[in-house]
Length: 507
Image 1 (cartoon, rainbow, N blue to C red):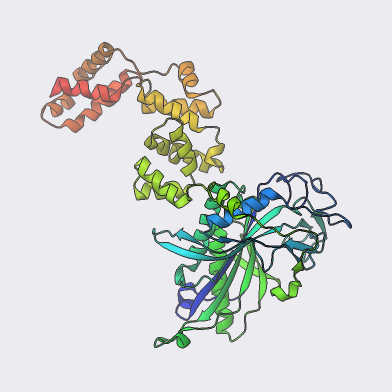
Image 2 (cartoon, rainbow, N blue to C red; image 1 turned 90 degrees about the horizontal axis):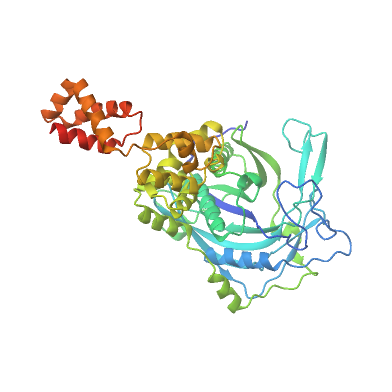
């Protein structure tokens, strides 16, 4: 393990500068330049053709839907959209790149000069400037067999699956992110999270980081802090440090941890008098460290030149404006609107956001549940069950319609909370929907006021000391009698009505 400097200590001497490159796999029906299907988990090398295999004489054709998705992403990121742009060949060797070049965009991206405002944990906003969003294709996937690391070094042999080759990608590149200071790792995580939410709202990608739909390359460098007495632009303009690029980080937590680790590692190298090597790095989730990959090339090393087999892309201004009209409500604005509509406090909404439950609660409210009931079920018992089972709450077999139906049974007075929990047990066990489970289990509040009043009289007679306390004004003591009434009625009494009857008799 390489030497690192304590995080708080490095901040006294260095300022971090970040650059985030996010690759987004689009959810088009076919690949970027051919008609092959794309989908996660297909048998290796079954979704390929001469074009995506790079066979001689095969000619590419641009996927129009991918171009329109790129434009919508650019517009949502407040970018300018090019009136004319071209594809280019990016030349470099990699075993899983069948053509030995990647069809991408170089100096003429489809979208450029934008920004994304991201919300940090304390509610403040940090603006991340976007340099460009350009179109390209994905490479294949190598699997290195044998060895201890899963990397090519030490492997016995490698397998290549070209199913992923040619899948349409949008690469979103930030400008250097400065001024974040100690919050740089948090800013990185918040940016990727906000970007993922935006892409999901646009419905242009599955945005499943664990499947590689969204992959982040995190560039990190440190520069010496300006002197305490620095005031002039020349004194404040400290040169940027040499960067490293941690490749293919595939979770929000890992983005934050990888940036933090690289900052600590850079500081140790610089403190020792050594220079940072411009290189790619690999992130190891299990150990929380990065390791060296390969020296990082600059743009000149890729020998870019215009792709001769593809015509330029020239979207009309009319079509761009038509696509702008399809943009959804920005996720941050939607969350604020929903919070107001649902009546959640800031803390309640933050908990919902952290749990990733905004969408399922929204679907439950749309199905007819109250916001309070939707939050209670999805954030309470169901969340605990999902955590215990190590699965997503949406995979328990309970749907928003189930929650809405169950909430309706409670509001209509058929079930109390205890009965509703029993019904949920049945739904989780696969016994059917809430009404079906309630019918089968005979769960229903007793509506006979006479039977309830008789139970109250019996409980009062059996507990004279508690009854005397209530007569003396200690109304909170009614809770003990309510529990006895519920027991007498086998849990099928309306607790609120029982309380009302008890107080009417004793006060």
